[in-house]
Image (cartoon, protein in one colour):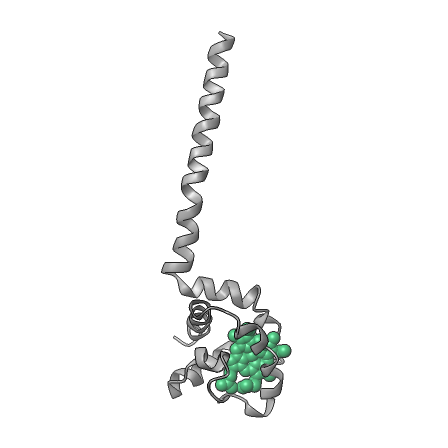
Length: 126
Ligand code: HEC
């Protein structure tokens, strides 16, 4: 009888472990490959530390994400280019010096992550 309990316990352990191994990789791929907006949000609030100066609706140190998204959509600008210092500021050029300090971070991000940041920011003007 004891043996049977052990066998069931071990069986349970193995099946739980398999489930975990199966789940993890698919979840990660779904967020980054199929939903750039989620990846962008992650970077915006994480390693990009953009949220300290940019809030969704209100202007703080920097313009709100909504204001930036609106203008970039209207003018057909590229946030990816801006973050690589390849294009001029169009939202608030008088405060450009403050934003410029962030290029140290953004210039080292892979293009895919810059595109994700752009997708996330533009999603505020739908
Ligand atoms: C220290 C504060 C600060 C941080 C941190 C910051 N920004 Fe900014 N950002 C600003 C200010 C101020 C402006 C307004 C100046 C300007 O328009 O260039 C700005 C403007 C912008 C613009 C509009 C550019 C334009 O065409 O005028 C974008 C896009 C932007 N930020 C993206 C980001 C992203 C993405 C991050 C994170 C990687 C970030 N910012 C982090 C302060 C900041």
